[in-house]
Image (cartoon, rainbow, N blue to C red):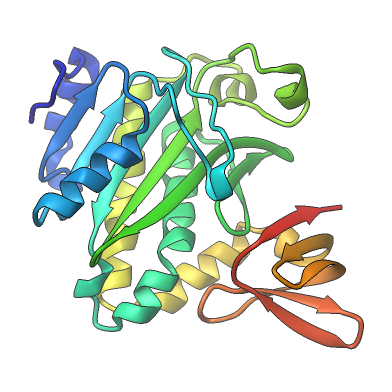
Length: 265
């Protein structure tokens, strides 16, 4: 297991000890003390060869990003910044597996974080992780040929968020009121992602959807604003369908939201 920079000892030891829990993941590990975006590095790996399971880690990102081009604050020593190359094209039902990959990753990360810290983590469609209504982390999935790069950023330590984010963001240490072992968080999130990736590949979609629904209280009965190519509309969430689209009741009809901005009001 090697990368462009030496893997920190705490991470190297934890990953080596847990190697049997990662299934198809961690076939290659690349670590960079600082990089623009782990997703960009993982995308280059995915485009150059068959790198299913490759994991890219960074101590800090200078150009971390979230969904729809939003900036993801990624200072050194404060978070976990990870990207994994997955190939849902290998799945029994490749189209549905690809559509559900972000939701599956959300379920996995919530499970992994709870295993590492005992915190109950909630999900918000399509790619956010919350604790007590404050954002803890996010997921960015990007297609590269037959592969999908799943990147995730988790706020581990209490950082000096900008005034704009201070009331809306949180960290594992803030919520647990204890020191959090980033190596344990990495191991548990990768192990959970490996399990849920296997669910995708073998068509166990209901297991993913049921757990996602159980962890997403805002997916039903919440008032939201939806901004899509058709404009901005106000409605009430009505769950998700079997392909991961958010259902929103707007007037007398139900809309399937598969892209665009959704804001909880």
